[in-house]
Length: 413
Image 1: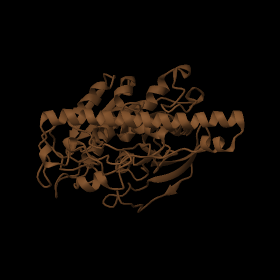
Image 2: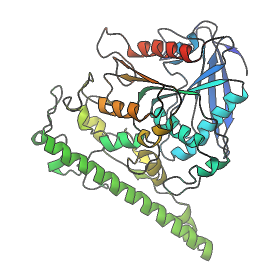
Image 3: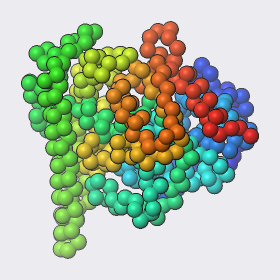
């Protein structure tokens, strides 16, 4: 690996502390089993034999806030991109597992004896899914993504990790969206369509404009959750119908040579999913109470975040919807994969998280099959930032907890 001194290396996450003196960085080009290109970034000093990996299926985490603490504690920090970084359009988690595998193979080739997967936010369900498939016999691994696309996990070298650390994990992107999707939408072609009886932002249903908090009655909550489930089910049906239409056109085109069918078989319609920031828990703090602030990770203006251009799953292929964003079809859910986590595990949740709530955290921790697990709760929001002006940053406490646990499990030479 190329050694690049980084004295004074700074970015938005490290402006206060920077990287420890003597930290070196190398960039590692990766090639997956199916030929995709990714990049890995290794941070270290000295000669560590344990690497701690941080990855997200759709975010660029080369400047993750826990990297300085990992390096300071005497370990190497590894982050890498997925092939779909910054792009939901074609993100299929089954294929992203090959991206994870490429990084794991590289670290073993580089001589690291121990590898710890640190699942932060959406990285938790990605890494837990990877572990489930890595521990399975090759012929027992998944062969297709939910949308029907083949993926050759059996042929991939998938080294399993030695331990896990989970920091502000969430149950999976599909479950997050199932809880946050606006159940009052009546027409997917009309972003402003609303069933007034299900509108989460209507006063008659319990909503109050900020800074007041909503107060949704239990009956409304039950109806709304059922409507959310119904909407996701309809979107699943739409996604499968679009895939079926394309594959049928492809079959016709191969048989007849008809140019229009060939074009229809190549065309992949993009699904636009509006109104995906309407989790009742973000506006009614009495539902599964915690230290969280009003609002979601997208902000405290529910009209802007729910109806605006930016949001979860806004644009995606039918295959990406089924694999990543459907709470009914996605395989990348902690409830489906955490039972394969037999390795030692650290679990850190922030008390003011607006993406994972106390009941979510309780369930995920319980789902981890390992008996060697410990949980710590730290004040902070989903990203470990202070809950109030002048309060300590939860990410600092998380970094210390992580460092102590790593040094206990993997003593420095």
